[in-house]
Amino acid sequence: MSALDELLTSLLAFALVYNNALVVLGPSAWGGVQPDRALVLAVVSEIAGTFLSPMSPLKFSAPEYLAALLFYVAFTAAKISLPISVFLYSLRGLTATSLLLWFGTPALAFAVGYLVAKLVRPSLALGYAVLAAVSFMFGVNNIAFVDKSVYVVAAILLGNYLGLRFSRWIVKLYAFSFSGAVAASVSAAVLAAVGTAFNVPMSFTLLTYSTLLGSAASRRMRIIRVVDFIKALASITSALLLAYATLILLGRV
Image 1 (cartoon, rainbow, N blue to C red):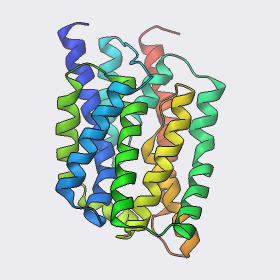
Image 2 (image 1 turned 90 degrees about the vertical axis):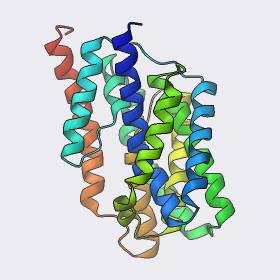
Image 3 (image 1 turned 120 degrees about the vertical axis):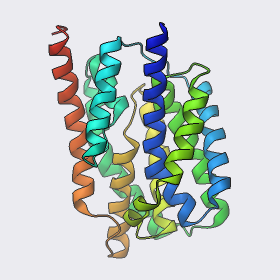
């Protein structure tokens, strides 16, 4: 891999980690567990998950890496989370399994969110355990899919640090509910394990938002705006269409 490819891969890994820290780590840290401890736990768990993952990173050309980064920046500017791993996976072709997992798991995440909110009583110890689990699975299912080189450690450190520091705004999605953060993390970890079994990267943002809708339904309160869920679901479709458009521009189809 050339130096340019290494740089682009590291930037993509950073973007993945940063976005996950905004949506998953931040609400857990600011909503219940201590931020500094949460940061250390997330970093260690993601590094462990990345290097212990059975998934292997796919290799892409420099134009494909650049396209992923440009689309990520554009979507972020529009306050929409682009699932980078889904975009990259789609560049190598879609399968019925991947489509079923991406578009079918939101319903499962909703059910998990509903049940967890109804049956589980959150505690600080549970919060730390769940954060470790979801961070580990993020490393297994997403980071390892993009990068497993030693340089990914720097991306994990910096992405989590900056994501946590800029994540206070996302807490409003959880209505400052620690139980909502725990439910979202449980759902994302479990369904990421399902995706890993089929070697398919999952969108942690979509799983998180789907779970929050389930949590809201169980308590008859609004934890997340439906429009945020719709935007997350639409981002999956957008990633597929952008991947196809990229392949056309590169003369691959």
